[in-house]
Length: 146
Ligand SMILES: CC(C)(COP(=O)(O)OP(=O)(O)OC[C@H]1O[C@@H](n2cnc3c(N)ncnc32)[C@H](O)[C@@H]1OP(=O)(O)O)[C@@H](O)C(=O)NCCC(=O)NCCS
Image (cartoon, rainbow, N blue to C red; front, top):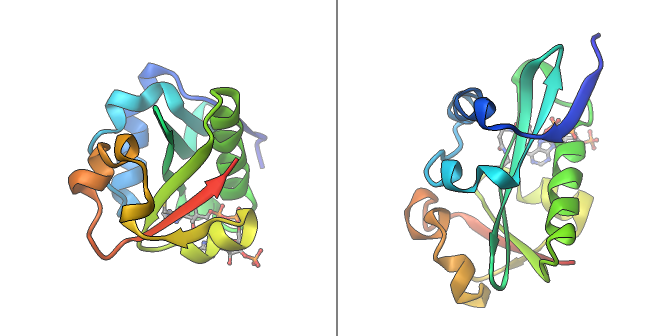
């Protein structure tokens, strides 16, 4: 297999990342405005995975963690998440929040994210499109203090 590199996304990755998110049944709304916090997994020049952190005054919002389905189970989801969390630490985020309908166990098991309620999330993070409209009310809300 060609080597896979985990690296910051560049603007020209946006369309391919949005396509990967749609294929993975994840929301796309709001990502373009926060693409500076996106990470990709690249294989032979092709984007095969992504993750992103939206930065707010009181914390980061981890979102859009996805791996091409032909490459799942090989550790790339964890590498992408690690890179996104490192980015949040570099930007001095005190905590990272997320919403998920599909992978609460993944983030709990590998990173220690804890389930919280929407009311526990700082107001600035709740302004994100994911909190406002893109994720269903039934999504699990989680936090990791950095
Ligand atoms: C979730 C996802 C990013 C994981 O990526 P991945 O590269 O397959 O994961 P890794 O190889 O790093 O880790 C594999 C481990 O995670 C576990 N895992 C994978 N997806 C999981 C999920 N949705 N829920 C719970 N655990 C999960 C696997 O069982 C495996 O555990 P094991 O090591 O005990 O066997 C990938 O399955 C994906 O793109 N899913 C669709 C999009 C999605 O739901 N994203 C998360 C919401 S933001």
